[in-house]
Length: 165
Length: 223
Image (cartoon, rainbow over all chains, first blue to last red):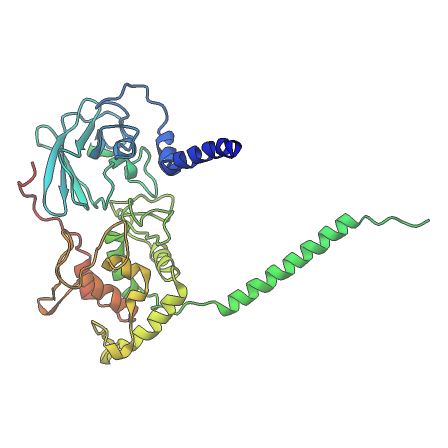
């Protein structure tokens, strides 16, 4: 009887642990790689914020939207001080401002948009503005679609100024 | 002296021949018997539907993803060519993309699609104009198709209910409204899809559906 109990305990522990294990989420987090900067508003620019900050961890701060804005199309200089207007389908909106690395975010306590959402980026002086041409149906991370390299499934990073050809 | 014949290579050869023969037979049978009866593919009937689907359902975070069963291609979302990029529509939706979306949709549930189309095609009124809602005697039941059930909110859908045929409607989903300024209130998206399933696409409804979701002017309610 005691032997059975000894065998059963690790099995139950494994089952309990596996109940909380989300392999897909863990894979997404792992794919982001290591972070050279300490956690904070300026870390991991250009990466999909809500992978870690979407409520499933590992980050404790839960965001509703987040992303990185670059100054010019095709370049990597961040656009700081840019106002990002997030508008939801009900007409509610929130203005967030990008920091030194171009990052912006909204926390769950600040703004929970009702998807779909659209976004507009406007320069600090208001002279330049770019609006999203489509909409996000349910994704709060800009970088989930706006990946580093443009391709068939990504328009490339979010930028303020169109490249001059 | 008796010659020793190695049995193993002979066995492998025999097995390979048998597998090839079975595979060939299976393919020929499948090719001969499997087909989908679906609304015909034509620029006039399909493009208005596909453009609506691209805008409404084919965003890159939803059905504009390669891993989806219902995969929607278009210039605002997923591109078929590795040289094209989404969003700007600098390269308009290509014929190959319209075809790829069509194949994805009609191939989702081929048998159900065949049943629905066969019965709904009989709902078309005189002059080839789609009748909405389909008359009961036509036995046209678009809701047999999963993509209709999900869009109408009858079945769980991660993107939520997108079509509302009867009030009350959830927030963010436009309530039924008369099409073209007259008639009974309808959901243009539903009319667009059902008319296509009847084989007589209502292009006015699809054009109206293309404007959904519409973002109202921002209010000052949140900030």
